[in-house]
Image (spheres, rainbow, N blue to C red):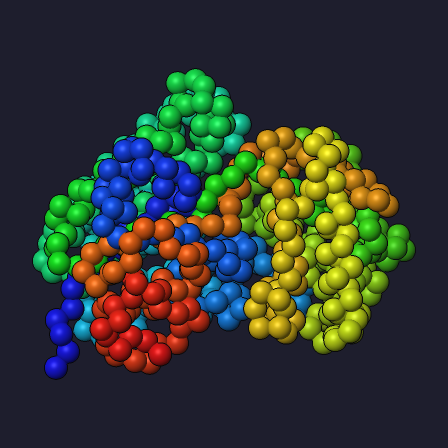
Length: 506
Protein backbone atom coordinates (compact mmCIF):
# COMPACT_ATOMS: atom_id res chain seq x y z
CA UNK A 1 0.00 0.00 0.00
CA UNK A 2 1.39 3.42 -0.98
CA UNK A 3 2.03 5.97 1.79
CA UNK A 4 -0.36 8.95 1.90
CA UNK A 5 0.80 11.84 -0.23
CA UNK A 6 1.49 15.29 1.14
CA UNK A 7 0.04 18.31 -0.68
CA UNK A 8 2.56 20.13 -2.90
CA UNK A 9 2.55 23.91 -3.36
CA UNK A 10 4.43 25.48 -6.29
CA UNK A 11 4.64 29.26 -6.28
CA UNK A 12 6.01 31.14 -9.28
CA UNK A 13 7.58 34.55 -9.74
CA UNK A 14 7.25 34.94 -13.51
CA UNK A 15 10.63 36.30 -14.68
CA UNK A 16 11.68 36.80 -11.07
CA UNK A 17 15.35 37.67 -11.22
CA UNK A 18 17.39 35.09 -9.23
CA UNK A 19 19.84 37.67 -7.85
CA UNK A 20 17.06 39.99 -6.70
CA UNK A 21 15.12 37.13 -5.13
CA UNK A 22 18.13 35.83 -3.24
CA UNK A 23 19.51 39.20 -2.17
CA UNK A 24 16.15 40.54 -1.02
CA UNK A 25 15.42 37.32 0.85
CA UNK A 26 18.77 37.60 2.67
CA UNK A 27 18.33 41.27 3.61
CA UNK A 28 14.80 40.75 4.98
CA UNK A 29 12.85 42.37 2.14
CA UNK A 30 11.22 39.02 1.27
CA UNK A 31 10.61 37.35 4.65
CA UNK A 32 8.47 34.50 3.32
CA UNK A 33 11.08 33.43 0.79
CA UNK A 34 13.74 33.88 3.49
CA UNK A 35 11.93 31.38 5.72
CA UNK A 36 11.89 28.83 2.90
CA UNK A 37 15.58 29.33 2.20
CA UNK A 38 16.38 28.95 5.88
CA UNK A 39 14.85 25.49 6.10
CA UNK A 40 15.54 24.22 2.57
CA UNK A 41 17.74 24.43 -0.49
CA UNK A 42 17.94 26.70 -3.51
CA UNK A 43 19.57 26.72 -6.94
CA UNK A 44 19.57 28.46 -10.28
CA UNK A 45 17.93 27.07 -13.37
CA UNK A 46 20.59 27.05 -16.09
CA UNK A 47 21.70 25.25 -19.23
CA UNK A 48 20.66 25.07 -22.89
CA UNK A 49 16.94 25.17 -22.19
CA UNK A 50 17.42 28.74 -20.89
CA UNK A 51 18.53 30.06 -24.29
CA UNK A 52 15.16 31.76 -24.78
CA UNK A 53 12.59 33.15 -22.36
CA UNK A 54 9.82 31.95 -24.64
CA UNK A 55 8.86 28.39 -23.84
CA UNK A 56 10.33 28.43 -20.34
CA UNK A 57 7.01 27.71 -18.60
CA UNK A 58 6.38 24.94 -21.12
CA UNK A 59 9.66 23.27 -20.15
CA UNK A 60 9.21 23.88 -16.43
CA UNK A 61 5.74 22.35 -16.31
CA UNK A 62 6.22 19.51 -18.80
CA UNK A 63 9.82 18.43 -18.32
CA UNK A 64 10.01 18.22 -22.14
CA UNK A 65 13.01 19.71 -23.95
CA UNK A 66 12.88 22.36 -26.67
CA UNK A 67 14.50 19.77 -28.89
CA UNK A 68 11.21 17.87 -28.73
CA UNK A 69 8.52 20.55 -28.40
CA UNK A 70 10.28 23.09 -30.67
CA UNK A 71 9.00 26.29 -29.03
CA UNK A 72 11.56 29.11 -28.82
CA UNK A 73 9.90 32.44 -29.73
CA UNK A 74 6.52 34.10 -30.12
CA UNK A 75 7.05 34.13 -33.90
CA UNK A 76 8.66 31.11 -35.60
CA UNK A 77 9.43 29.75 -39.01
CA UNK A 78 7.18 26.89 -40.06
CA UNK A 79 9.37 23.82 -40.71
CA UNK A 80 9.57 22.98 -44.40
CA UNK A 81 8.63 26.53 -45.46
CA UNK A 82 9.83 30.12 -45.34
CA UNK A 83 6.63 31.16 -43.58
CA UNK A 84 6.58 32.99 -40.25
CA UNK A 85 3.65 32.39 -37.93
CA UNK A 86 2.83 33.39 -34.35
CA UNK A 87 3.77 30.64 -31.90
CA UNK A 88 2.27 29.99 -28.47
CA UNK A 89 2.77 27.28 -25.88
CA UNK A 90 -0.63 25.86 -26.77
CA UNK A 91 0.49 25.50 -30.40
CA UNK A 92 2.73 22.56 -29.51
CA UNK A 93 1.72 19.00 -28.55
CA UNK A 94 3.05 19.11 -24.99
CA UNK A 95 1.06 19.11 -21.77
CA UNK A 96 1.94 19.99 -18.17
CA UNK A 97 2.82 17.14 -15.84
CA UNK A 98 -0.42 17.39 -13.86
CA UNK A 99 -2.37 16.38 -16.99
CA UNK A 100 -0.92 12.89 -16.59
CA UNK A 101 -1.56 12.41 -12.86
CA UNK A 102 -4.20 9.99 -11.70
CA UNK A 103 -6.80 10.87 -9.04
CA UNK A 104 -5.04 14.13 -8.16
CA UNK A 105 -7.02 17.17 -7.10
CA UNK A 106 -5.33 20.26 -8.51
CA UNK A 107 -5.48 24.05 -8.25
CA UNK A 108 -3.74 25.76 -11.20
CA UNK A 109 -3.79 29.56 -11.23
CA UNK A 110 -2.32 31.67 -14.04
CA UNK A 111 0.59 29.50 -15.15
CA UNK A 112 1.74 31.27 -18.34
CA UNK A 113 1.83 29.83 -21.84
CA UNK A 114 0.58 26.31 -21.20
CA UNK A 115 -2.27 24.18 -22.49
CA UNK A 116 -5.84 25.36 -21.92
CA UNK A 117 -7.66 24.15 -18.78
CA UNK A 118 -8.60 20.48 -18.98
CA UNK A 119 -11.43 18.49 -17.36
CA UNK A 120 -9.42 17.44 -14.31
CA UNK A 121 -10.49 17.36 -10.65
CA UNK A 122 -10.08 20.71 -8.94
CA UNK A 123 -9.80 24.33 -10.06
CA UNK A 124 -7.98 25.76 -13.07
CA UNK A 125 -7.73 29.46 -13.92
CA UNK A 126 -5.80 30.55 -17.01
CA UNK A 127 -4.82 33.97 -18.38
CA UNK A 128 -6.77 35.97 -15.80
CA UNK A 129 -3.85 38.14 -14.64
CA UNK A 130 -0.56 37.28 -16.37
CA UNK A 131 2.24 39.27 -17.98
CA UNK A 132 1.08 38.99 -21.59
CA UNK A 133 -2.10 37.03 -22.32
CA UNK A 134 -2.42 35.65 -25.83
CA UNK A 135 -5.82 34.08 -25.13
CA UNK A 136 -9.01 35.06 -23.32
CA UNK A 137 -9.28 34.05 -19.68
CA UNK A 138 -10.55 30.51 -19.22
CA UNK A 139 -11.37 28.22 -16.31
CA UNK A 140 -12.27 24.68 -15.42
CA UNK A 141 -14.99 24.17 -14.57
CA UNK A 142 -16.08 26.69 -17.25
CA UNK A 143 -18.72 28.33 -15.06
CA UNK A 144 -16.00 29.36 -12.63
CA UNK A 145 -15.04 32.27 -14.89
CA UNK A 146 -18.32 34.08 -14.30
CA UNK A 147 -17.90 33.64 -10.56
CA UNK A 148 -14.37 35.07 -10.66
CA UNK A 149 -15.44 37.98 -12.83
CA UNK A 150 -18.28 38.85 -10.47
CA UNK A 151 -16.12 38.69 -7.34
CA UNK A 152 -12.67 39.83 -8.54
CA UNK A 153 -13.29 41.57 -11.84
CA UNK A 154 -12.68 40.72 -15.50
CA UNK A 155 -9.39 39.53 -16.98
CA UNK A 156 -6.70 42.12 -16.24
CA UNK A 157 -4.00 42.97 -18.76
CA UNK A 158 -1.50 45.66 -17.74
CA UNK A 159 0.59 46.42 -20.81
CA UNK A 160 4.21 47.47 -20.80
CA UNK A 161 4.77 50.97 -22.14
CA UNK A 162 8.46 51.43 -23.03
CA UNK A 163 9.49 55.07 -22.79
CA UNK A 164 6.45 56.10 -20.75
CA UNK A 165 6.59 59.31 -18.73
CA UNK A 166 6.69 59.28 -14.93
CA UNK A 167 2.95 59.93 -14.54
CA UNK A 168 2.14 56.90 -16.70
CA UNK A 169 4.68 54.80 -14.81
CA UNK A 170 3.03 55.77 -11.52
CA UNK A 171 -0.35 54.61 -12.83
CA UNK A 172 1.11 51.32 -14.06
CA UNK A 173 2.78 50.74 -10.69
CA UNK A 174 -0.48 51.38 -8.82
CA UNK A 175 -2.33 49.02 -11.16
CA UNK A 176 0.22 46.25 -10.66
CA UNK A 177 0.07 46.59 -6.88
CA UNK A 178 -3.74 46.52 -6.94
CA UNK A 179 -3.68 43.43 -9.12
CA UNK A 180 -1.30 41.60 -6.78
CA UNK A 181 -3.77 42.24 -3.96
CA UNK A 182 -6.70 41.01 -6.05
CA UNK A 183 -4.74 37.93 -7.13
CA UNK A 184 -3.85 37.19 -3.51
CA UNK A 185 -7.51 37.32 -2.51
CA UNK A 186 -8.47 35.10 -5.42
CA UNK A 187 -5.84 32.54 -4.42
CA UNK A 188 -6.96 32.57 -0.79
CA UNK A 189 -10.57 32.21 -1.87
CA UNK A 190 -10.00 28.99 -3.77
CA UNK A 191 -6.98 27.42 -2.05
CA UNK A 192 -8.77 27.55 1.31
CA UNK A 193 -11.69 25.56 -0.10
CA UNK A 194 -11.17 21.89 0.58
CA UNK A 195 -8.14 19.69 -0.01
CA UNK A 196 -5.80 19.90 -3.00
CA UNK A 197 -2.96 17.50 -3.73
CA UNK A 198 -1.20 20.07 -5.90
CA UNK A 199 -1.40 23.83 -6.32
CA UNK A 200 0.60 25.78 -8.90
CA UNK A 201 0.22 29.56 -8.64
CA UNK A 202 2.16 32.14 -10.67
CA UNK A 203 2.30 35.92 -10.23
CA UNK A 204 3.29 37.86 -13.36
CA UNK A 205 3.53 41.38 -11.96
CA UNK A 206 7.28 41.11 -11.33
CA UNK A 207 7.71 40.38 -15.05
CA UNK A 208 5.84 43.48 -16.22
CA UNK A 209 7.18 45.59 -13.37
CA UNK A 210 10.84 44.79 -13.95
CA UNK A 211 10.63 45.77 -17.61
CA UNK A 212 8.65 48.93 -16.88
CA UNK A 213 10.60 50.23 -13.88
CA UNK A 214 14.13 48.93 -14.43
CA UNK A 215 15.29 52.39 -15.46
CA UNK A 216 14.45 53.65 -11.95
CA UNK A 217 15.80 50.54 -10.25
CA UNK A 218 19.14 50.70 -12.09
CA UNK A 219 19.69 54.37 -11.30
CA UNK A 220 18.11 54.22 -7.81
CA UNK A 221 16.65 57.68 -8.33
CA UNK A 222 13.18 59.21 -8.41
CA UNK A 223 9.92 58.29 -6.70
CA UNK A 224 9.85 54.87 -8.38
CA UNK A 225 13.40 53.89 -7.43
CA UNK A 226 12.04 51.03 -5.30
CA UNK A 227 9.09 50.08 -7.50
CA UNK A 228 10.59 46.73 -8.53
CA UNK A 229 11.43 45.90 -4.91
CA UNK A 230 7.93 46.81 -3.72
CA UNK A 231 6.35 44.57 -6.34
CA UNK A 232 8.53 41.65 -5.25
CA UNK A 233 7.72 42.42 -1.62
CA UNK A 234 3.96 42.39 -2.31
CA UNK A 235 4.22 39.05 -4.14
CA UNK A 236 6.24 37.61 -1.24
CA UNK A 237 3.48 38.75 1.12
CA UNK A 238 0.94 36.97 -1.11
CA UNK A 239 3.02 33.79 -0.80
CA UNK A 240 2.99 34.21 2.98
CA UNK A 241 -0.79 34.57 3.02
CA UNK A 242 -1.18 31.46 0.88
CA UNK A 243 1.08 29.47 3.19
CA UNK A 244 -1.12 30.50 6.11
CA UNK A 245 -4.09 28.64 4.57
CA UNK A 246 -2.10 25.81 2.96
CA UNK A 247 -1.57 22.51 4.85
CA UNK A 248 1.70 22.47 6.78
CA UNK A 249 2.52 18.83 6.02
CA UNK A 250 3.64 19.26 2.40
CA UNK A 251 6.69 20.59 0.52
CA UNK A 252 6.79 24.12 -0.89
CA UNK A 253 8.56 25.06 -4.11
CA UNK A 254 9.32 28.60 -5.28
CA UNK A 255 10.39 29.03 -8.91
CA UNK A 256 11.14 31.75 -11.41
CA UNK A 257 11.38 31.27 -15.15
CA UNK A 258 14.18 33.68 -16.13
CA UNK A 259 15.94 36.78 -14.82
CA UNK A 260 16.23 40.34 -16.06
CA UNK A 261 19.09 42.34 -17.55
CA UNK A 262 19.84 45.67 -19.19
CA UNK A 263 19.67 45.13 -22.93
CA UNK A 264 18.38 47.18 -25.84
CA UNK A 265 16.91 45.51 -28.94
CA UNK A 266 19.30 44.20 -31.59
CA UNK A 267 16.73 43.32 -34.25
CA UNK A 268 18.42 45.43 -36.92
CA UNK A 269 21.88 44.08 -36.08
CA UNK A 270 20.67 40.48 -36.28
CA UNK A 271 19.48 41.00 -39.84
CA UNK A 272 22.41 43.22 -40.83
CA UNK A 273 24.81 40.47 -39.72
CA UNK A 274 23.38 38.06 -42.27
CA UNK A 275 22.96 40.65 -45.02
CA UNK A 276 26.22 42.58 -44.76
CA UNK A 277 28.43 39.52 -44.35
CA UNK A 278 26.95 37.87 -47.42
CA UNK A 279 25.05 35.01 -45.84
CA UNK A 280 21.54 36.20 -46.74
CA UNK A 281 21.13 37.45 -50.32
CA UNK A 282 18.63 40.06 -51.46
CA UNK A 283 16.63 39.36 -54.63
CA UNK A 284 18.07 40.76 -57.83
CA UNK A 285 16.12 43.82 -59.08
CA UNK A 286 14.63 41.92 -62.03
CA UNK A 287 13.37 39.22 -59.67
CA UNK A 288 11.34 41.54 -57.47
CA UNK A 289 9.08 42.79 -60.24
CA UNK A 290 7.20 46.04 -59.97
CA UNK A 291 7.50 47.55 -56.47
CA UNK A 292 4.33 47.29 -54.39
CA UNK A 293 2.88 50.45 -52.83
CA UNK A 294 3.76 49.29 -49.32
CA UNK A 295 7.39 48.70 -50.34
CA UNK A 296 7.59 52.20 -51.80
CA UNK A 297 6.08 53.64 -48.61
CA UNK A 298 8.63 51.79 -46.47
CA UNK A 299 11.51 53.15 -48.54
CA UNK A 300 10.30 56.76 -48.37
CA UNK A 301 9.41 57.06 -44.68
CA UNK A 302 12.06 57.46 -41.94
CA UNK A 303 12.38 54.54 -39.53
CA UNK A 304 10.96 56.55 -36.62
CA UNK A 305 7.82 57.38 -38.60
CA UNK A 306 7.45 53.75 -39.70
CA UNK A 307 7.66 52.69 -36.05
CA UNK A 308 4.92 55.12 -35.05
CA UNK A 309 2.65 53.96 -37.85
CA UNK A 310 3.37 50.32 -37.00
CA UNK A 311 1.91 50.81 -33.53
CA UNK A 312 -1.40 51.80 -35.10
CA UNK A 313 -1.65 48.56 -37.06
CA UNK A 314 -3.30 45.57 -35.29
CA UNK A 315 -0.83 42.93 -34.12
CA UNK A 316 -2.28 40.28 -36.44
CA UNK A 317 -1.84 42.54 -39.45
CA UNK A 318 1.72 43.45 -38.42
CA UNK A 319 2.56 39.74 -38.19
CA UNK A 320 1.25 39.16 -41.72
CA UNK A 321 3.22 42.10 -43.10
CA UNK A 322 6.41 40.92 -41.41
CA UNK A 323 5.93 37.38 -42.72
CA UNK A 324 5.35 38.71 -46.22
CA UNK A 325 8.47 40.88 -46.07
CA UNK A 326 10.50 37.94 -44.71
CA UNK A 327 9.56 35.70 -47.64
CA UNK A 328 9.93 38.33 -50.37
CA UNK A 329 13.14 40.08 -49.29
CA UNK A 330 15.52 37.14 -49.73
CA UNK A 331 16.90 35.25 -52.70
CA UNK A 332 16.74 31.81 -51.17
CA UNK A 333 18.68 30.22 -54.04
CA UNK A 334 21.78 32.23 -52.99
CA UNK A 335 21.30 32.27 -49.21
CA UNK A 336 23.33 30.06 -46.85
CA UNK A 337 22.15 31.50 -43.52
CA UNK A 338 19.17 33.68 -42.68
CA UNK A 339 17.94 35.62 -39.69
CA UNK A 340 14.61 34.74 -38.07
CA UNK A 341 13.26 38.15 -36.95
CA UNK A 342 13.63 38.67 -33.20
CA UNK A 343 14.06 41.69 -30.96
CA UNK A 344 16.96 40.58 -28.79
CA UNK A 345 18.69 37.20 -29.11
CA UNK A 346 20.02 36.51 -32.59
CA UNK A 347 18.20 33.56 -34.15
CA UNK A 348 19.96 32.20 -37.22
CA UNK A 349 18.97 29.26 -39.38
CA UNK A 350 21.00 27.50 -42.05
CA UNK A 351 19.37 27.22 -45.47
CA UNK A 352 19.93 23.47 -45.31
CA UNK A 353 19.30 21.22 -48.27
CA UNK A 354 16.58 18.67 -47.49
CA UNK A 355 15.15 20.77 -44.64
CA UNK A 356 14.40 24.14 -46.23
CA UNK A 357 12.41 24.32 -49.49
CA UNK A 358 15.30 25.88 -51.41
CA UNK A 359 18.18 24.81 -49.19
CA UNK A 360 21.66 25.05 -50.70
CA UNK A 361 23.96 24.05 -47.80
CA UNK A 362 24.78 20.35 -47.80
CA UNK A 363 24.29 18.44 -44.55
CA UNK A 364 27.37 17.07 -42.81
CA UNK A 365 30.73 18.71 -43.44
CA UNK A 366 29.41 21.85 -45.20
CA UNK A 367 26.81 22.43 -42.49
CA UNK A 368 29.38 22.05 -39.70
CA UNK A 369 31.90 24.35 -41.42
CA UNK A 370 29.24 27.02 -41.94
CA UNK A 371 28.28 26.92 -38.26
CA UNK A 372 31.93 27.41 -37.31
CA UNK A 373 32.34 30.34 -39.69
CA UNK A 374 29.16 32.02 -38.44
CA UNK A 375 30.29 31.60 -34.83
CA UNK A 376 33.66 33.16 -35.64
CA UNK A 377 32.00 36.10 -37.39
CA UNK A 378 29.63 36.68 -34.47
CA UNK A 379 32.43 36.60 -31.91
CA UNK A 380 34.43 39.07 -34.02
CA UNK A 381 31.78 41.81 -33.57
CA UNK A 382 32.86 44.73 -31.38
CA UNK A 383 30.80 47.45 -29.72
CA UNK A 384 32.65 50.68 -30.64
CA UNK A 385 31.22 52.50 -27.60
CA UNK A 386 32.86 50.14 -25.10
CA UNK A 387 35.52 48.46 -27.23
CA UNK A 388 34.29 45.11 -25.90
CA UNK A 389 32.94 42.10 -27.80
CA UNK A 390 29.34 42.74 -28.82
CA UNK A 391 28.39 39.07 -28.53
CA UNK A 392 28.45 37.42 -25.11
CA UNK A 393 27.71 33.83 -26.12
CA UNK A 394 26.97 31.72 -29.19
CA UNK A 395 24.96 28.52 -28.91
CA UNK A 396 24.67 25.84 -31.57
CA UNK A 397 21.59 23.64 -31.40
CA UNK A 398 23.61 20.61 -32.48
CA UNK A 399 25.82 21.07 -29.41
CA UNK A 400 23.01 21.93 -26.98
CA UNK A 401 20.65 19.15 -27.89
CA UNK A 402 20.82 15.88 -29.79
CA UNK A 403 23.65 16.52 -32.25
CA UNK A 404 21.48 16.62 -35.38
CA UNK A 405 20.30 19.72 -37.29
CA UNK A 406 17.08 20.78 -35.54
CA UNK A 407 13.74 20.53 -37.30
CA UNK A 408 12.23 23.66 -35.73
CA UNK A 409 14.85 25.46 -33.64
CA UNK A 410 17.38 27.99 -34.95
CA UNK A 411 20.73 26.42 -35.75
CA UNK A 412 22.53 29.24 -33.90
CA UNK A 413 21.42 31.57 -31.13
CA UNK A 414 23.56 34.57 -30.25
CA UNK A 415 23.34 36.47 -26.96
CA UNK A 416 24.30 40.12 -27.27
CA UNK A 417 26.46 41.55 -24.50
CA UNK A 418 24.54 43.45 -21.83
CA UNK A 419 24.65 47.18 -22.42
CA UNK A 420 23.07 50.27 -20.94
CA UNK A 421 23.12 51.97 -24.34
CA UNK A 422 21.42 51.20 -27.63
CA UNK A 423 24.01 49.78 -30.03
CA UNK A 424 23.42 51.74 -33.22
CA UNK A 425 26.41 50.04 -34.79
CA UNK A 426 28.89 47.24 -34.23
CA UNK A 427 32.09 46.59 -36.08
CA UNK A 428 33.33 43.48 -37.82
CA UNK A 429 36.81 43.29 -39.38
CA UNK A 430 35.14 43.36 -42.81
CA UNK A 431 32.09 45.64 -42.37
CA UNK A 432 30.22 47.86 -39.93
CA UNK A 433 26.67 46.82 -39.05
CA UNK A 434 24.05 49.50 -38.42
CA UNK A 435 20.54 49.53 -36.96
CA UNK A 436 17.83 52.05 -36.09
CA UNK A 437 15.45 51.79 -33.12
CA UNK A 438 12.58 49.39 -33.80
CA UNK A 439 8.99 49.93 -32.69
CA UNK A 440 9.66 47.92 -29.49
CA UNK A 441 12.40 50.10 -28.02
CA UNK A 442 12.75 48.65 -24.52
CA UNK A 443 15.87 48.77 -22.35
CA UNK A 444 15.60 45.29 -20.78
CA UNK A 445 15.63 41.68 -21.83
CA UNK A 446 15.90 38.42 -19.94
CA UNK A 447 18.96 36.74 -18.49
CA UNK A 448 19.48 33.04 -18.99
CA UNK A 449 19.06 31.96 -15.39
CA UNK A 450 15.99 31.17 -13.33
CA UNK A 451 15.52 30.44 -9.63
CA UNK A 452 14.43 27.46 -7.59
CA UNK A 453 13.91 26.93 -3.86
CA UNK A 454 12.27 24.13 -1.93
CA UNK A 455 11.63 23.22 1.70
CA UNK A 456 9.43 20.95 3.73
CA UNK A 457 8.77 17.24 4.26
CA UNK A 458 10.75 14.96 1.98
CA UNK A 459 13.33 17.64 1.10
CA UNK A 460 16.74 17.13 2.69
CA UNK A 461 18.70 19.73 0.67
CA UNK A 462 20.00 22.76 2.56
CA UNK A 463 21.63 25.94 1.34
CA UNK A 464 22.95 26.64 -2.13
CA UNK A 465 22.78 23.73 -4.59
CA UNK A 466 24.49 23.27 -7.97
CA UNK A 467 22.68 24.68 -11.00
CA UNK A 468 19.89 22.47 -12.32
CA UNK A 469 18.04 22.20 -15.61
CA UNK A 470 14.52 23.64 -15.68
CA UNK A 471 13.48 20.27 -17.08
CA UNK A 472 14.31 18.73 -13.69
CA UNK A 473 11.44 20.52 -11.94
CA UNK A 474 8.56 18.45 -13.33
CA UNK A 475 9.96 14.99 -12.51
CA UNK A 476 11.00 16.21 -9.06
CA UNK A 477 7.50 17.51 -8.35
CA UNK A 478 5.94 14.28 -9.61
CA UNK A 479 8.15 12.29 -7.23
CA UNK A 480 6.31 14.00 -4.35
CA UNK A 481 2.89 13.31 -5.84
CA UNK A 482 2.85 9.75 -7.07
CA UNK A 483 4.82 6.52 -7.06
CA UNK A 484 3.47 5.55 -10.47
CA UNK A 485 5.83 5.17 -13.43
CA UNK A 486 5.32 5.99 -17.09
CA UNK A 487 6.12 9.71 -17.31
CA UNK A 488 8.24 10.72 -20.29
CA UNK A 489 10.51 13.44 -18.96
CA UNK A 490 13.72 14.81 -20.44
CA UNK A 491 14.80 16.04 -17.00
CA UNK A 492 15.95 14.11 -13.97
CA UNK A 493 15.30 14.09 -10.23
CA UNK A 494 17.05 16.81 -8.23
CA UNK A 495 19.17 15.23 -5.47
CA UNK A 496 18.04 16.19 -1.99
CA UNK A 497 14.83 17.71 -3.34
CA UNK A 498 13.06 14.76 -4.99
CA UNK A 499 11.12 12.37 -2.79
CA UNK A 500 13.41 9.38 -3.17
CA UNK A 501 11.18 7.27 -0.96
CA UNK A 502 8.82 7.09 -3.94
CA UNK A 503 9.65 5.15 -7.06
CA UNK A 504 9.33 8.37 -9.03
CA UNK A 505 9.09 8.75 -12.79
CA UNK A 506 11.05 6.70 -15.27
